[in-house]
Every structure is written in structure tokens, then in C-alpha cells.
Image (cartoon, rainbow, N blue to C red; front, side, top):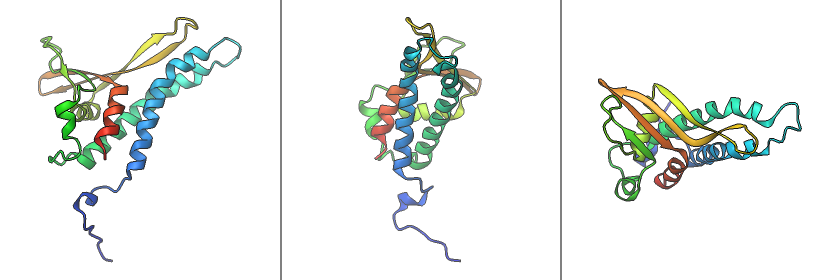
Length: 174
């Protein structure tokens, strides 16, 4: 057997096409946006409401997609050079907020895309933001995820805006 060594160094990592990444960004945006619309469609006319089989899968699928996108980004582009995402740190307002020490109630800082990926990967608990539709009374997910974990002795909490995360993912990967 002969080992194939790519001539372009950036292709020497896991060869996952950008198309798969962008498809997952699209799916994440669709899942997180559709929850409210599906809750709105409930009219009590069916024995098995739409939300009964949708809500069971929403949280696990959103979690899976967040984790996949975070790992993909970190594997593919977190080599220290920041050629693909440097603009994000200079001009982007962030994808949420981060309380670096929830026990001491320190103020929150903006959560940038790279740090959001870290928090997604290292989260010990993941909570979703749930609301009740004003007309149908059906629970739905807002596009917000709360991530909890620790670094050393400090407990952190990240509030992730999925819509902003998707916008950043679409712009940082080229």
C-alpha cells in the first residue's frame, strides 16, 4: 500500500466536504426556526398532534447538529492561524453571551463563534428555551440554548443564540 499525501496542507485533515457542513447549518436553522411554526399549526383536529412527534426529536436533533458543527469547525479550522475566521473576532458582535463564573455572578461577555464551539463541545448540561404559543397553548423551542460546564473550579454558563450561530457558521467557513 502507498500512503497518499495531499499537496495542499489544509486538505490533510479529515476530508469532510463543505457541502455537508452547510447542509447541517441549514438543518439547524430550520429545526430551530420551525418549532414555533409547528406549534402554530395545531388546531386540535387530529388525534395525534404534530407537536407530539416533533417535540420528542427537536432537542436531540438540535444538540446533535450543534455538536457536529462545533467539532467540524474545530477540526477543520482551529489550527491557530485563523485565516478562515479572523474577521469574526474583529467585527462580529457574537453568537450569545458567556458568564465565565456563575457562582460569583461576574458580568457576561460576548460569546464569539470559536468559544461557542468550545462550550458546545465541553458542556455538561444543555437546556433549551421553551415558550408556550399564545393561540394554541403548545410548547415550542425558541432558538436559544443554555450550555453549562466548568473550567477548573469555575462554573460557566453560555447562552447561545442559534440564529446568530448559524449566521456566523455560514460566514466563517469558506
